[in-house]
Image 1 (tube, helix red, strand yellow):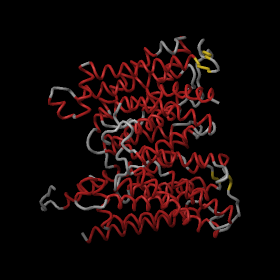
Image 2 (cartoon, rainbow over the protein chains, first blue to last red):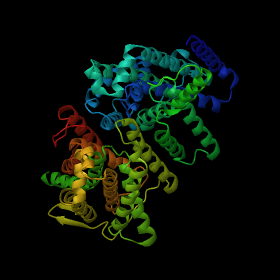
Image 3 (cartoon, rainbow over the protein chains, first blue to last red):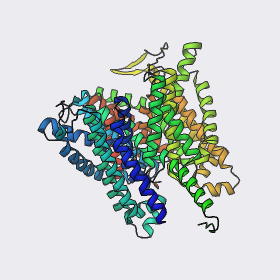
Image 4 (tube, chains in turn blue, orange):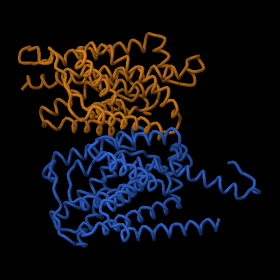
Length: 333
Length: 289
């Protein structure tokens, strides 16, 4: 297997180099914006995938943590003049702490009703931020003061800098996923995802593992929230707790390949590219077309390729590997 | 003060009847087919649009359009079950959740494309009528909706408990394998259950139309209520869903009356969270899925 490993690392090095070089080549703001969106939603997808993909705890409420991250850093910045870099970490911690009671409630349900409970908690949080104006600006939201170029306050003059920030976030997310995938926790998560009762029967402490992975997933999602509001300079409950964020987090993972390291990234590339093409063809005036197409892609994947695009890639790779070694007996597990 | 409370309770019960039609559909599908239909609200929306177009282009009264919306959605439900849902039934949750979820996204956004986001209303001769009893005010359209909703729920209960088809459905809900061994064709039973649930959603749409606007996102309001009611009333329990829906209508209405116009949903979510915290099996008791 050493040979495959070498090629994997080489491919990864080329990919990283290309991603680092990209803003030097692409100067078009619209194109860079699409790349930033791809990286951001890949990152959110990676965060979702840790819990939703490996442990199959299919949350549709990750907007809760996105919003908590966004609001924590913004409140700290505007009310206390604390840098969003610190706010980002603080937001992650707030999200992590919030995931404890939310998880305590939602993990009482399994399968589809877990999903519904997560939707309800995210909606409830949005309502709280809408209703209690003392907490934060209510429904109108607020703009984030533009300080010009101020890297210490996570504000940059060029889109390229934002690109590097979110690229860094994605790298962290993938590294954490890789580490977890290779650890005992990764195996526990997959076992829980396959059959929670069976996993518990062989001694996996399912409630603890689910709690821990939910905390990690919430933490990462909150980082994305902080980045996003810093990038668009605006926050309101409808943006920060948008249901579409929960949807997209799950969608990119499922389309790309649920419970795989690169699945969310590949899924985001496909979906965001589709959406960008649709926008440039039809203009943004045609409401609904983007999600109509997303829904059709999602249905097609579920009905014909439930393992997602990564599953298709793996099938092709396996077929080629078998062709290359015709002498080796095919083992069927 | 007492009058305000009584008025709020009546308002809540009347709208709770509509919630009941939606949540009985959700709980019926869950009980029999063992999946959660995330698209149930979108079928209420479709029922509303069918009613709207029948009224606008043919002048058909929303109550008469029940005879169109219910059969159309029944057939749609049976076809969806046969061609889509049947393919993902099995132990794996992911495809089931996200297939109906994709269906919901698809219907919602297609409606946005085809019908635009405009609010559509139907104005019938009884839309503004109301009955006054003492200081209490009962809108006629809502009263009709409530009565028909209760009649339909009762009809479903009779169907489930007295007819062979209904008994087959309940048998398939209890144990699919044993039911199959007894000669029940599960695919046929599932198709009927799914169709019946969608017909109820379509009925809810038609009944709502004289006093409620149709717009692509309208289903989301009702499906959220239905999900909470179904958890509260124990998953798969038809009577539980009915009682819980009425309770939620009343809770929402009292919340709007005494906490503020935008707090209806907060009250409902609070009910869900309290149920999950203290009685996760729901008020109907029994085993949780």
